Image (spheres, rainbow, N blue to C red):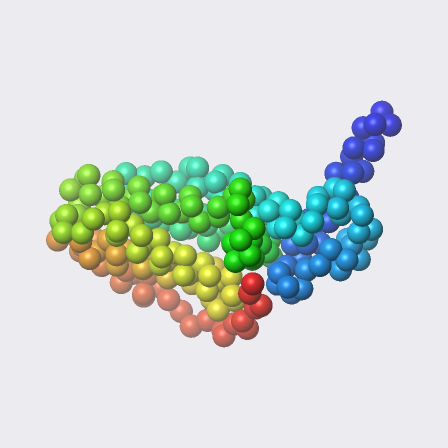
Length: 229
């Protein structure tokens, strides 16, 4: 019983540390996060952080890993045989993830950027890999279904489509756009890439969806750029 209580208390402190880290990263960026500052925010000692989690890089890896797990879960039920609908479901699932827990997602994405730029991402979960794989699958499925002319390699189309998604996600991370704009920008970019090699009927469907997304756009308040790693 006593052992169980100690384990529960240990886990509570670990979660308190991670919660404080998410808030600090979302507010101040990676440079604003130090183990000493985090100890004060979480109400624990510096040795406690090292004992329960590790150094700053380990903390960033934990946050990134949690986001990757959430993204995998969100994307696990978005299968569709229709490339237009599949793209909409994938991007919509990620936009919902961003909206549901904005501070956490910003913190985890910044953690991933910091690990990558510092060369400390070896063995760390790759936040973008799953999105790139899904983009390639959508484009290859469209090619196999005869929806593309075949003038372009579908894998290359997927790379450019994925870039559109990633750029929109970084704009959201930096506070340039809101999650709804991320969803719209990512979809329009993806559909335009498919339209470049689409057969006439499929191209008309893509352009129709793009025009609908443009019509749905409404003026949004200017956002203040947030610090980025």
